Image (cartoon, helix red, strand yellow):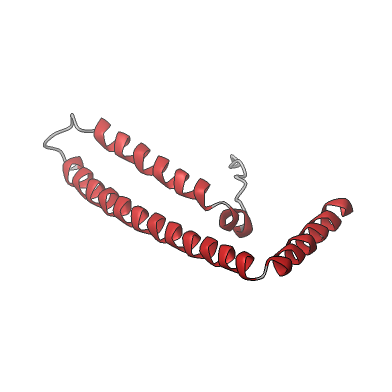
Length: 113
């Protein structure tokens, strides 16, 4: 009986905290899949042709969806940044207080380790 190596899976907080890395991983996955599909191009006339064409269609759809998700994330980030900028300009001392409080909280959490 062979044992499979245990693959470490990231927890959801790690995925949610780094969307840029996740988007980069998906882009690399799509590029690798396209390269794999294109490597089978010399096998014409076999059942693999239909599988290859279906896979290319799926990859094209995935690319479009990935770009739309990337645009949506970018738009949300811009809205959040504009809201934060507006808050800082309207209430600068409250913003300083919030930043100081967060800094204190992070410092306490780091010092516990």
